[in-house]
Length: 257
Length: 257
DNA sequence: CTGTACTGTTTCGGCATTGCAAACAACGTG
DNA sequence: CACGTTGTTTGCAATGCCGAAACAGTACAG
Image (cartoon, rainbow over all chains, first blue to last red; front, side, top):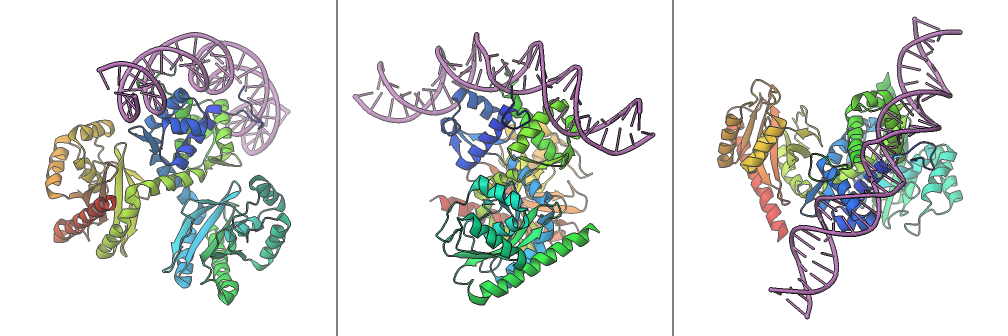
């Protein structure tokens, strides 16, 4: 029966559907056999699935290539807007972007990763790899560490247990103890840093934000190393970012009343 | 087995999964029984589905309420960016928004409806109902008619056959002949109008854009009736919008070379 | 023009999986 | 304390999925 390792019963076909959609998304455009290979499914089985998903207008098929349909975009945008931080963070991100001329993000935690919910670009903004909707790992980013610092230690442990501490650059923290001691001081300072830990040449400063839905989030400013140096990196930006994070939290708590 | 009205084999569970996700999206937040009622499924069956989708991190469950997860957002954003018009239209929309101070949209056709892919807000922008990712019907909007005008008549017929011509306001075109004659003149003029046909008090001007992927799209400017009047509505905005549409198409064709 | 290889599509039977019924658990409410 | 409601688990029957194999359509080489 459909019982899996989890305590509850699972619907295997539902898992398959999600895997198919994700694979199409990753490959961006793929043929039946490409997908069958990637998913390790028989072509006939996959064909039935794909036909169904096309009929449901989740996928598009041009000629023999499958791509994601915009239905995911429609519902995904709704999920984005439904997040309480989406609207509330807007003005603060814009303010940071204007003030610093760099790029500012609001990142929210979900299932052990950070999701980039909204950005605001300053005039000098450089956008190295993050994009709206992107998922980032929590150990190698300023926003991620600001999120981890808010979580109970056991949850943080579970997350790094699940995703590990993969090394992105030579600065990436790959040792749990180092990470946790940094989180500890982050809790005191109210700020976290990313000093070329995910991408060489890029630095970032973040501050934790407690989302009204009880989840952890963070505001972050990032930019090229040559502009994020000295007191600007260690003093000015932290003040701006943590100021905005505090103001945002204040706004959120007052909105409830 | 598994064969449906369509010629091909369908995976019934895949249909169910899509229906579940869409229902959660519509209800935005719902309990098991609410969803079971809406979907007309037995609670035990639905429970297995929902548990699976939570495990797949497509849904979130807080307490007993289910909501859409941000996974859809992640993949949806990718689908948005993958559309060739997303990047290319940006500058033209911004230019229109700045010039007109109203709100400008790029809308692309998919499965007989228009999807709002990107917007640019001018300083006076009013955003009545459309949101990024929203789907709009094609018969009662300027962008929709600009899209219909590009399609072969039989496809346009099929679309209005599928969705009908529901009356939104007293100005909505509900008669196919009227619609098709308007499309005919739209093809000559290169512009379409929305004169309070979807929302009372709102007008819009749109121009067709042929997407490089072969699909129909449109650029549209909309605003309150009191600002869209006289020559501005009939001359100035049409010139601006069709100019931008032409420039965008030029950009698209030159990008190929 | 024919043979071969590859990909996409359809058909078909066995059996794993799903869906339903029913029972159970955990509330809150009258 | 009995009752209604909702979420969760279990068991059973048969639906509907999976995989093999055949079929169709295309590209390419000889």
